[in-house]
Image (cartoon, rainbow, N blue to C red; front, side, top):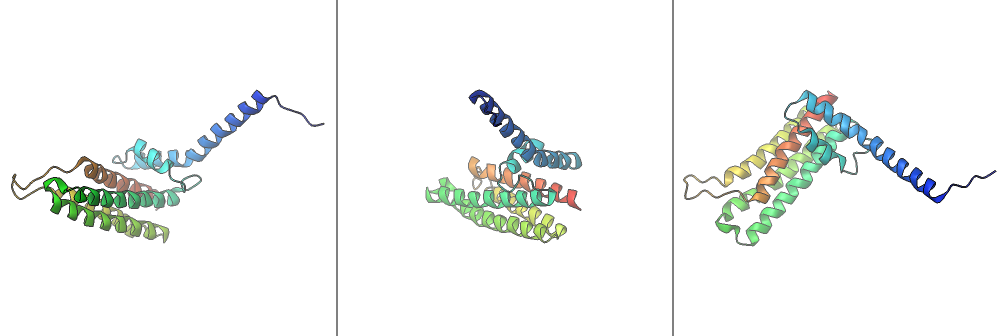
Length: 184
């Protein structure tokens, strides 16, 4: 005999399945980020969960997959930084044209470094992958340094949108490295 559910019972069941499904999907990200933060005090647990949890490759990924996701998010943000530097430069640069042009170059290189980190981790060459992630973070720091002049008259403030990318690159490189360390 076929049993019919009342509409509100079916709706409650659908919501329960959706909620439980979300919890199950995020469990690997949550536990991996917790393990990474426990192993490396530099890892921002909330940032790790937020950034890795929204990537389409994260559900069901193990630590190896999440290390690659971290590298890929670094690629995307570095590319966005290069575009932001280009856009600011197109608007005149606010007296920091040379620094913005340099930042565009540096963030393009950082994007390639994060992409190489992904490829190395994918090939299970973890030391090389961690090195490339560190290189990417270093390139982002060099952008900040490009705004520091040799004297106070030549110095310019790093535009907030560019500074945010520098912070992101450093944080995601740390996450990538810490998760990669969990694999080894």
